[in-house]
Image (cartoon, rainbow, N blue to C red; front, side, top):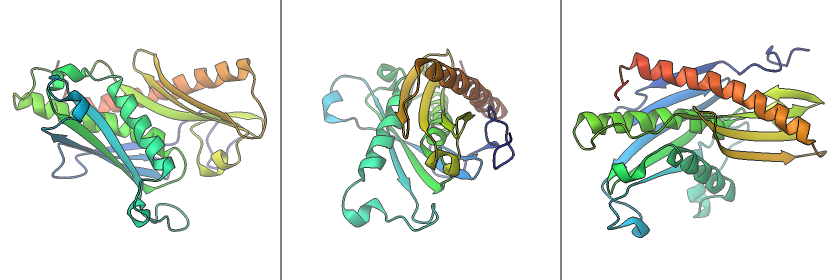
Length: 245
């Protein structure tokens, strides 16, 4: 049975990544996954958190937000409440962890790279799209630093990408859109590296428990989708001529 958008159960939504989306950022991409659109920008600053001062090591972190009309009804900005919402905090920490997992922070020096991930349009999978896009923005920033002689070489250990999987109406599905996600019995977000290692698994039974066998099936399906996303990332990097060793 085909899904509402015409995909098969094991198909990603169409993915488009536009690099150089913002002129002044050290790295930037606009990633589109179906109707979900996220602007990911990298900023390099000569500072580190207090706990790293004097260590010689750098830091990679992220901030995440949704533009007010990225959703069907207006979402208030975090600044309106004077604090970052719990959901946004959780997501930006996930993005930061995912990128630090593939970065040799000691080679960055006492610098911080901040990945700003701003959701322009949300139709499910905003956090996984942000991770997938932010990796390329991070790669661009480090590549440009290397070309300028600020660091000795590229120090990303491997690539990282993410997607969602779930069970909706008893069917296993890859890369859920909002309608599928909101009605899913089981919902997973999976982050994985290019060597096939897991960075994070976020999984919840929304309406009924799932079996170990179903979990293994979801992980296998997520790996299939992530491998496709990793190939798209590499095509973007190669087309930009950034294959620096």
